Image 1: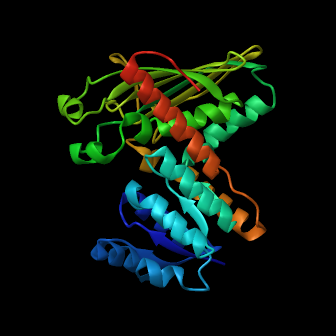
Image 2 (image 1 turned 135 degrees about the vertical axis):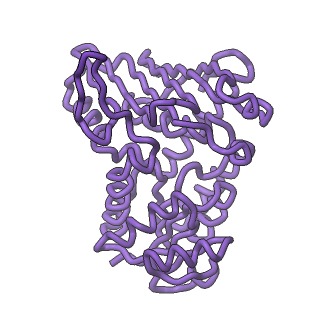
Length: 328
């Protein structure tokens, strides 16, 4: 049994707490949140005790932490947990500032504790099957990768203002997937973006529609398309094209029922958002983390993966700001 403290009792925290509660190898021992009523509600649903950071990390029976609090708290909590000798699972990103990320990762490495970053899409069954197909050579040499990721609606403007921008907040998941599928690091990034969904997003200094092209040293190309608005649901699709064929993963629907009639052919829209789209991925990433804690092996995605995805997001922002490709 791995004893956990969870930091953060918001929307993503509810997912992690529910999964911890349902996992036979995990025990939710503490919940810490700046808004104590939220922490209390979570413990009433899923167990554990409301606590503070110092008390929780001082518990010698505590094995690991889940950091699902606001982004500006991630690095500090990671460092405190590492110094207390606790294994760390942290939602992306580690921080919005690269220097802070590097300092945090050094502290964690010096402490020698396991660290996993929550790029949950790597654990989606469909994307795992894509990865397995690539490894098995079903597309030959990968040449083109297309990733489509569109949210059903933009987040509140107050969130936009502190999110770090679309590249670091939303596209960072796709940038991680790009590295994972391409199997080599991009060396060039070019970004083009607009504010087409809500002018208030532009007023807040962000964009809501973007296309980023990545190029690796061997010439592999990846195109990522993001939008903050897809009126038909959460649009998550991947296509991998290579010398021997193509692999695709489409959207998931609540049912596969299709009605055909005189007025046309209709079926379900894609799942509404990530909570409904990726439940298996969240459960699987927790299983992987517990496996690594129990066996004493390094988890993936690692802290280095978190840093690499942020570097690509930073390069995309730089490219958009300058209107030019950025070399890495």
